[in-house]
Length: 108
Image 1 (cartoon, rainbow, N blue to C red):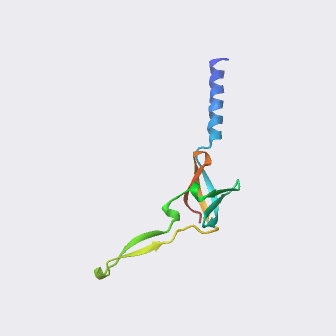
Image 2 (cartoon, rainbow, N blue to C red):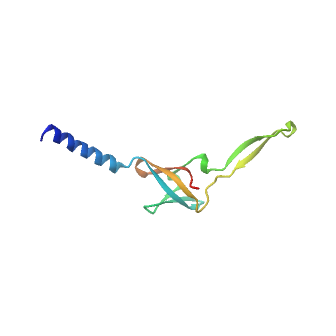
Image 3 (cartoon, helix red, strand yellow):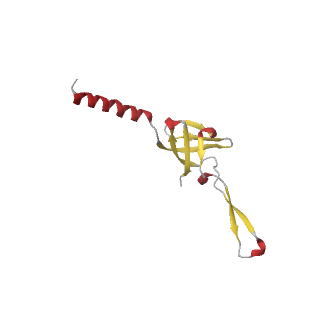
């Protein structure tokens, strides 16, 4: 085998391996259950449980400080309600050969 043919064969093997490993990819999913959290991934009908989902603050309720103009009221708190609900469509990033998904946010 010539040097050029060997290089081409190695490149083909590496390209095939990289494509098969599917390291990171975007995915769309739908919340099928909020409690316990389960998300169905579009395209392969795979259901992912909460233990395999990494949630960001974009999809979680958050307590925030609210400062008022009147000092006698002191610090107050408000809530940003972002928790996931059944039927929500999500944008996810598949990581580490599809073992876990990072939930980036909701599709609007």
